[in-house]
Image (cartoon, rainbow, N blue to C red; front, side, top):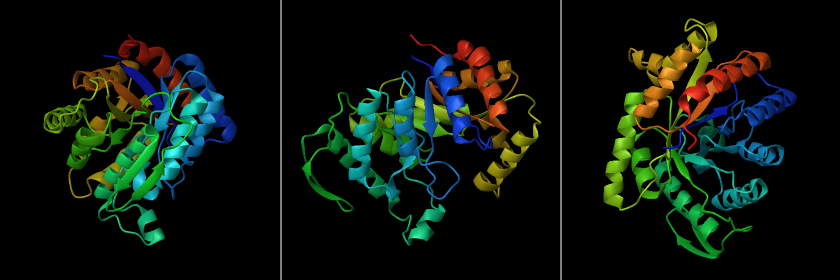
Length: 309
């Protein structure tokens, strides 16, 4: 099983464009597997599709993807064309993860739309984008989308994998039905393993196969004290968001925090649960802190976790 570690930009680092490229160049030079961008149209994050095109031009080795692209807010034909173009620019290094979004996203209210039915819409979206990427002629009739016409060009030289993001039962079923892999987010290893087993069980019903190393997890990182103020702030925010009426004890188990040995142990626990791809999101105060967190990950954790065979 190929175990690889990728990264998202540092949470809280407030990077400038020059800071960002300094970090990307360091990741490219030091063996980080991939760079990932999340999708928050009304948030502080940069727009992910633009960033992937920029990464295709800036890098030569690293892969990159979306974590995750919120498909109800995106036109499938436009995204299929963007995927095909970025795949061509990067010569095969695009790895998008797609998801349905969350019900309380402010974009729903801002645009006068509703999150109701977003699961069914997303299923159609994924199927249509797959056909647009793979077929010369497409004929699609659904409840949400209709398309009769040519597939997109430049035609990808390989099948671009479309992984599914999300921790819900619906995400598990969606992965088994139409996904090429699964990337969970911010859950402990036991729940990650349960999700993988759920997908594998569902695959027996759908009659499909997913490669054994196409299961991954996004985790928050801080090499340093578990009592770091940034860690405590992030935990408090997540408890409020994810378990406002519960004890929130599981929040402590979704962080890869502590010494390099502690972080290594956390990632290995996920590997034992069946995860082989990681998106590490460092908690950093500024660009220098982000560089140091990345350096610790590259020098002291990745060699103990990755299997590139």
